[in-house]
Image (tube, rainbow, N blue to C red; front, side, top):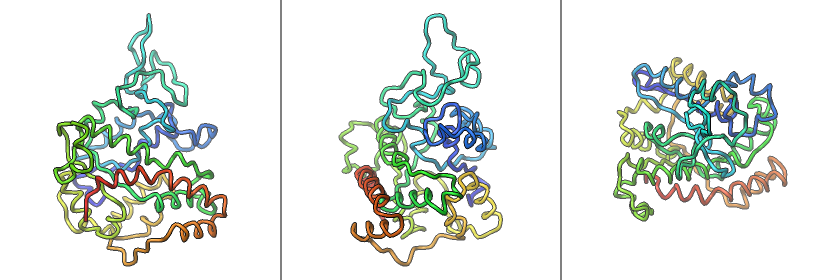
Length: 327
């Protein structure tokens, strides 16, 4: 966001289609018509979001921070391409005419599944040729940190700010991130650098056609912010300058407020900060200490749900961690 002169930034745009639009995949707002309408995104499809991004670029490079699970049907449901992206199944006597992604002006019924074709091995609702236009980088965080943080935003008093009153474990997103990562590797869109070959990429038999794997761990970012941001910039082709770690100007602060306003309550720590410096205290808690802390904050039943969700996602996190840059 501090590079507004060369980058046009978008914060989680695909959540609009995933939660609110006629192609929505998520169930959180399925029975909340008012919530969908209040969002202002009831007509957002995956195509309209891509169009919006392209229109806003104004010749700048696009930077999108988003969630892999916004692109993948939840609960490992079989994927097929979003209707607005032009892959509607054709039967006898049908035409290819489409209006806003709906054949012959009809309206798609939510939720998933779509009446569309799938692409071989593609876990997302986005065609491979569209995914191929993006330069992917991956930011991961240990579930023992991310899951309790997510749970907190679904509980009083924060729930009244975020508008999320239930915790849904299937929104953790690790499984979807791993499947997207593996798919992009399988088609050669991202490929391990030579120093990462031992992590298992050689077993795929792929020839590198894409960019190097860029996986960053949030703990490394907190401990070594300058080194991590510089490595990220080098990987994706952005010029690094130290002032990227400072967003104390009013223009930067206003940009952050506008970008995060859609997800009220989720980014308060970032909004209340002005820069990124190495954290001074890193305390690794035992499982017992974590369980005790969660029981004290949320009760025994909630602590059990948090622990089960953390444990369910550790394997996917550790798999991706095997590809992360080392600092």
